[in-house]
Length: 306
Image 1 (spheres, rainbow, N blue to C red):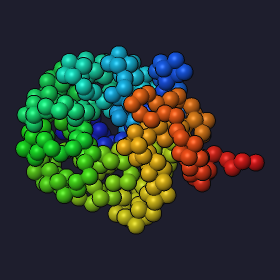
Image 2: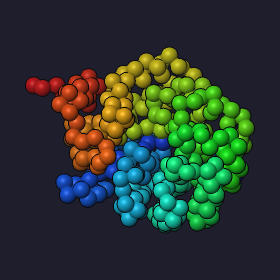
Image 3: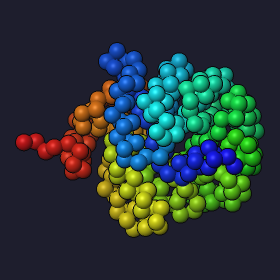
């Protein structure tokens, strides 16, 4: 394994922060609004930053917007941490994004699991292989939102030379444990359900976790990771309980408030990154906004009135 691959594997064993996508009032992307978010995350110690992930509203972006975002994110990050570039949708859109991501200097690709209702397990393997060929050796992290493709397909995907990691975003830790046992030990398995599920997935072999919270409070995410890294599950669960109300807000409206709560929190702490595109929920209801404001004050991220 090359030194570059080792460094990437080490980083993937930490926190993969999923960056939001800023918009202006005319609904145009405004990547420069990410600057304070990126700087805050890197200064806190976040190990990897991801452009065009689900917290980045990937499925609401045009391919051209996603291409612009990976270039801008890489420029803002400026080599300080690895850049993971999300690619997906139709095969040819994904290939175009993979090529753009390579040109932008991305450290690796994160391939979104195809949401096609007629998605065949062997078709997913072919989909990933063709993207890998187009990316000419750029490392790949698989993003599995569910495990319905089965263990055989997961094993086939993990045999691809370019695949270095798997983000497991399914609440099925026992199936994750089975996949880890069945696949090459070089693969880094990442808890893809953020802080809330990190203890359960870490317990069966995940070595890092994803986070949208890092856009708002990266220091807390780092504290949770530090607790898990030392096997202190009691401390990790105590820290997760502190953000449980925030995560419960994100899960409202069938998870449609997920990004909305993050962007509203950024507005409240003074780093306005705009609205959330439909079909996400926007704006927040008065009750949601009030609960969120109280939570941010409790955390000390905004000052109490007066």
